[in-house]
Length: 476
Image (cartoon, rainbow, N blue to C red; front, side):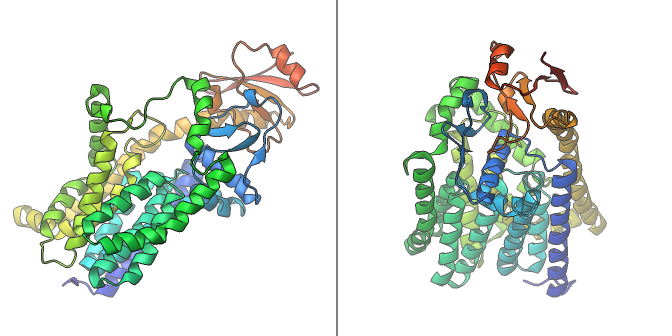
């Protein structure tokens, strides 16, 4: 379906140019606004494992006094390694090895946009593909993930690739498209297994057992690799890092909430949290009105439309994520409120592209052509403003969390031992996997400094007191 006002080649050139510009935007935010700093414990954990991988190693040996070196989401016993699956860290390692780990996630976001553009162009035409690129690429949730080190961007990129292959398969029903579909799902299993499983289950909506079997068979290498990694890293193919890390979590924060439970369906607090996440996705973290236009798009694709099967799959994928949300814990954390719904941005972008023509025609019919153009401009400006408001809150938090490391660097004492005095010291006691240079300790508050001094004879001992700025005091 080509545009009547602009050749398809023009739309393609514009789309690709915008994808490139958005990639530059993500990289600039990552490097300069967020200081290329892994703010959350999740980000730091995968970054640490990426450093280990970049050295060609699976894990690093733990030093003495490991009980004083606990840090969020990192397993430290006889060895040091992340509790998370290896996929995100393996990709980060490619950049870390060349001194540009912060560039990896923006490039993954570009890959996701290219897959989204290709799939939508194939099914709905070049103009709709441009709309899909803008809808996904400017969604504040996507921008935030693309400028951070969370696992959601590589997951979205891989499953956007799978989505594109499914789009091609629905067009010609050739099995060759199911092979890369399954390989992408298997790779996503190495990054975020739950997302890969949800995506695979949603494929049942395609009503083709053959498609599910072929894609599932091609996903098996990724699943087997994940099990082999767990066996090598944690001692058993059926023991993941979450289980191994749980005793550390209990020691730091107490018993964790049950992450998956049907009881969340009737728990008033969890119900409220789930509604708030859905509200945040619809109102704060997607392109304004895109979810409404996506609903229009789902209605606009008729039963006879070539994209009907992909539309059904997309709707099912969103429904599957909402259903999973309702039975999981939804406590606030360091990330974007609806970040576990990140993959749902793929079908939302596709369906928004499908509904854009109808929504535009309605606005033009009510208010005129100029009003339609004005509405599009307002949507884009509001999306950028919403993300800017988030950055305004996020940047000072980044400065505070990295402040202790900057203060320690100003000491010019590479052999210093710093006792972190903070409400949650394990959020700041980041030493890297090899514990070289300045050493940060998350010792219990009741531990005498004399005991610390005895453990590290000859090294200067400092206390870092949480604040803005951090205050470093030499222990006599």
